Image (cartoon, rainbow, N blue to C red; front, side, top):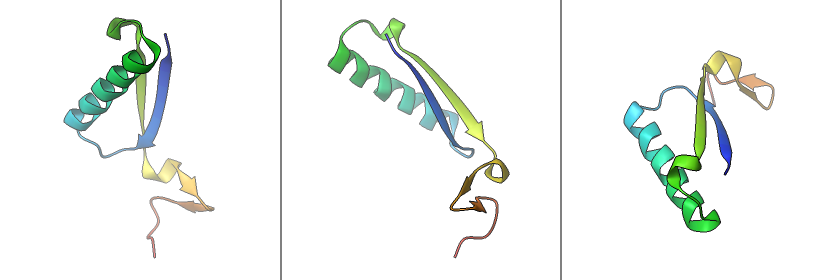
Amino acid sequence: MPTYHIEMLEGRTVAQKKKLAEEITRVTVEVLGGSPESVDILITDVKRENWATGGKLWSEPRE
């Protein structure tokens, strides 16, 4: 079964990450079959100063 790698800006709560993991697992089993125990999810929190979009760090003010 799949292993999902999720990178996102830090700031989500443990409850939000738990719900995300539950839902990804549920949909994976629904679509691909298999058991929930075979779905791995790795969540990486990235500091805003380590992520840039359009050449601008997310730690910089947005317009």
